Image (cartoon, rainbow, N blue to C red; front, side):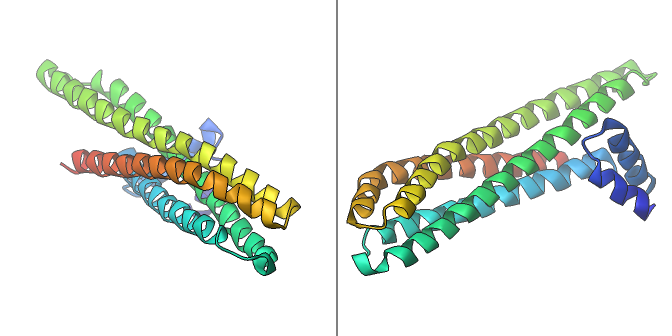
Length: 212
């Protein structure tokens, strides 16, 4: 069983392996609903981590514009580390959202198929209503998550440009460029943090509906 799970996780992009993984987990009492809850929680936590990282990166930018000429190399090294960490956090967010979307698609497909197995039309209708509401709540959450994900790209792009310019021009001109871009970076980061907060809120709301 353990070898099957390890192999399937490594090849999760293959639908056959994904199905086998689901069967293995269901044999242990773990349903797709439980997997979805776990993945939503991880996606929410990844966004929270990314929010902290982008806040840290912004603070590093603010500190950078105050340095004097003798600290430029150290400043570049610190700023570069912040950029690299921000990229890693952004990728983690995307990976977690993709994992959520994958299991949600499978869950809703299975749910639709199982509704056809009802012999009681009233119970079938109630299940369809619950499915519709759950899918609607999920849609709002996914939209918020994707919006936050998209908001990371322009911030990372500006961040990368400034880090590269500082690398290539370790002088006062590079610092002046950072000063000119700081207001734009602050504005873009503020919008990103708002989107992330909204996505985290939607994730919490969706988790509440699943547990009710």
